[in-house]
Image (cartoon, rainbow, N blue to C red):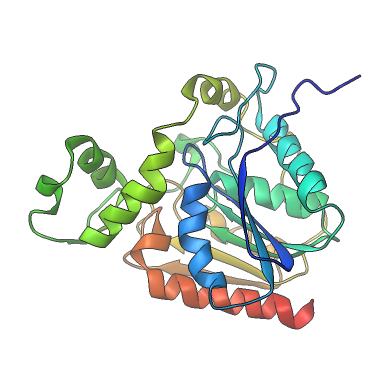
Length: 271
């Protein structure tokens, strides 16, 4: 019988060579990953970057029967089958995309050459269960919030630790743009069954080069819960960046690029 949760994901593809799959977080779309991952691979040739919109986000539909994170993971698995096949690939996941990426690294342990996690959602999927710091703003440019559209200012202020003209621009172009087009009705349905049936770290430890990036001031998913993932990733570099919240990729650009490039090079040395 056909799987009625099957859906075709919209995606953007860049470059050629070794595949890199980049999964964005909950509510934004592929533009979040495109904005932070492309500058990294502009400095490394020979990679084919794939940026899908997860179901119910961006331009990817979510059929009524899609109602859980298990269904979301299945959609990503099908995307890999269609676009990558059995070829080895690099895997990057941000926030909720990091949760799915960890599960994908379990189900395709022999195929995933390396795993990079950006502010990943850890095992405490529900916010009350997470150990997170209170939101705080550590740097801001005078008059910046007043210069923004009121809605942009509200969304931006709620999550951003480093509030500058550039972080505001990138927030609007790479993050808020996705929030504006999300299918909130479908997301509400999926959100009722957010916990994966099988824990991402349920199998053998992942033995390949890994990067786990967290923000010291991340009031969304924190950094303490992610530290507890380390035993499952014996080849992981773990970094908690100061002056960084849940969007550390736009708040600590130089550190982000340097750590991502180190991960890419570690993977390449062993692939």
